[in-house]
Length: 118
Image 1 (cartoon, one colour):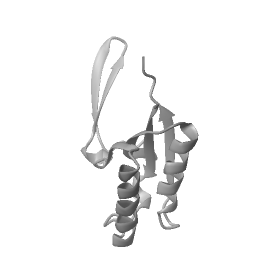
Image 2 (cartoon, rainbow, N blue to C red):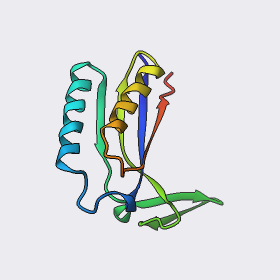
Image 3 (cartoon, rainbow, N blue to C red):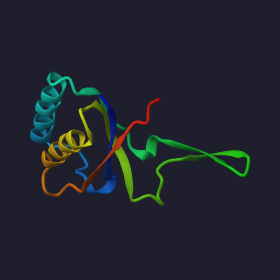
Image 4 (cartoon, one colour):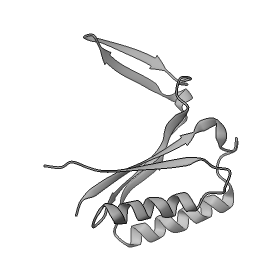
């Protein structure tokens, strides 16, 4: 079965300062349990804020480093999941279900991409 990486893109400044609500965390936990029992979930995690990150860039034959936060970036990757699904339609459905758990004030994008394996 193909594997899919879902990148969860968020606007860091739009979420609640104290993180997801307890109700949202409970809904996420229930979905995570369901997708794991279905044998689909391979790995998932949230990411630390960009203020704790470093970008490493290769340009013109040189390496450069930029410590976060990355002010030029509005939308950032806030988390990911790696799943094994029968097809892209199933992977997109799981992403849709994850997004629908969130309260209306969240702005989140899920980018679903199949891993190229050879």
